[in-house]
Length: 490
Image 1 (cartoon, rainbow, N blue to C red):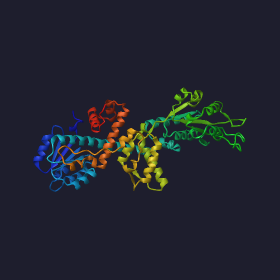
Image 2: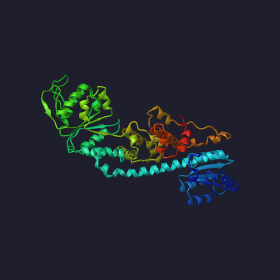
Image 3: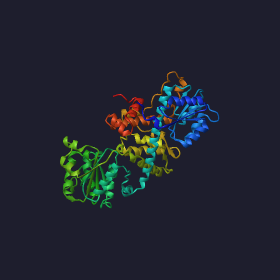
Image 4: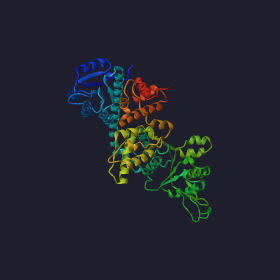
């Protein structure tokens, strides 16, 4: 069983000797859609009229060498994968061609049919990968236009960027609850933008002209936190030299945002519950009750239900806060928003640095799309800031975005460079040194393919049938690729 339907992808073989052309067509006509051309000029004429997935060219031809042909063919068929065959060895020329990504493989003549058949199948696999990557990049470029769309304009005060279905549901929830006075609980992993959603709720509410006051519940000690929330009277404790209004008072007529509310100590939970129930507070050390008009928006990355079951969070406070829950998706579940976020952060960094806004090269964007982003949008923002500082000229390439730190042993292993392949049986060592690993872009594509396979298997919980469905490929193709990357162990 073949890895894919190889006969669906035209393969062009170019040589100046008719015997070689006839031998190639006879050897591979059953497995591939073989087209032949005698010499470089005939090949270019053929490529101008027909598509090609793979171009196999002899290096030593009169009038035009194989490498010169592949250079000219790249303008006509940029997705075609080049293979060079020659009985001569010009190492410097071939190394330059490999590093320029014109040549996928270099094999010596006379070629071995079994070996070349494997290489041709691998080249078609690579062509399919190139084509899918270009299609994805084109689609993402279209999505960038959404930055000026109606939805982003509506919530521009909160700085929310994205057009994915997952984020769309969040914005619809924000639009529904913003005009009300209901308490909102925003849930999501760290770095997903909970404060931005809280600000969007405030900015799109009747309280938009009032204050938006934030309290970092996890950053303050219990004693300080209570004073910060409710204020204190003069002499209430050592160091209280004057009366101080708390955050509740400062937020009167506006919105109070309780960030990481799951970290509130028990004593503060009791006072917060009363404030929510009665809409009134008392300063620390005071006796006067203050009636306040404050809308509460809380946020947490913790599992409050588990905290309630463990006795660490009051159940009645949980119900008071969880009136209108909004769940924020992690960035790995809305990858289609990454290009929009990248453009947003690039533009902002350009303004801050006083430089022209750089562009992100397609291969760099692909790396960002495949990374799992444990730190979510905040991690992406930090990376773009670093990349913008390190950018040379007007482009950001793989060198800048490869500063991603490994977030787990699994990812660390995935980011590690692959060991160079050994020499093929019966082949000279210098030919092995010219294998695809010598091409920087080739290494990146191999790495991207491997990580995409790992991601699909993780999302499919180890089911290879489901992983193949997620990738949009046949099972046989998946098995072949898993074996190629050493991922086929059960």
